[in-house]
Amino acid sequence: MSHIAIPIPTIPGRHEIEIEVTVNGLKEQLHYRVELFYWDNCSNPAGHRADCISEMLAHQDPDWAVYYIGAPNDEYVPITFVKKESRRFLQHSRAMA
Image 1 (cartoon, rainbow, N blue to C red):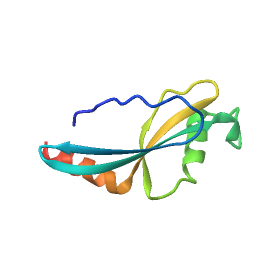
Image 2: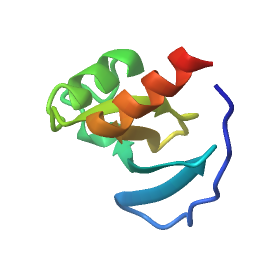
Image 3: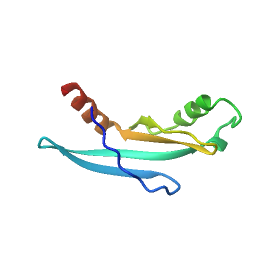
């Protein structure tokens, strides 16, 4: 599957992103969410970061799936989620390729 990069403003907090795409005449709405997960919010901030990410993701809305885990820095890790209905469209598109 091809990818297109879309810049998102670097403001703190949660970003809700809705994109309408038309590919070969097929129109679809895609829903993404980008959140910054701060290491200080972990129960053991000094522990292994993979454990911290797993802990933070355990409490996420089940209607959203992890799509991409960005590059972490000393304060946080950005994580992109995709709405499950959008994910089905993306998986269907990938299967047709």
